[in-house]
Image (tube, rainbow, N blue to C red):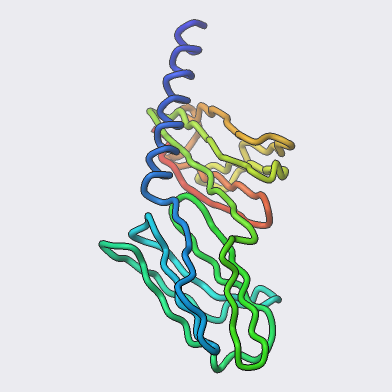
Length: 198
């Protein structure tokens, strides 16, 4: 029993280290440079790779790009073709998804400086068939965790509610097949990750 507890603590420490490493490489902040007419310019600091998307209020994807840079990421979007209304700029790194509001009114576009929502992604660390799952849940929203075998048999299904830091350890070493798929859903987002059983 002591051996299992010690291994679990080591795995949890590894998972937390992975979260911190992701945070160092994937956390970011947005600085609004200027707004001129229907053009908005901004800089994403502390990030070298990010996915940027623009959605309308019905969550229809309007624009998408993957950006990499050796320095801060600078972007300028000309929204002249956009009709009046509200849009959302979504910035997705390895660690989190941040959403910013864009308002187009008349001949002017305004981008919110602060994110209107941020969702931190789950982190899975697999060590010899034992998987540590950690996630920062700032909204304390219910987190649904499902695990499927390689033949799509549901192995695990639980909803965790009201926790800021969600963490679990799973032993998948005796599962039939060579892979397991984790499906984690919260705050309207679903994350899917497949891990090797051994």
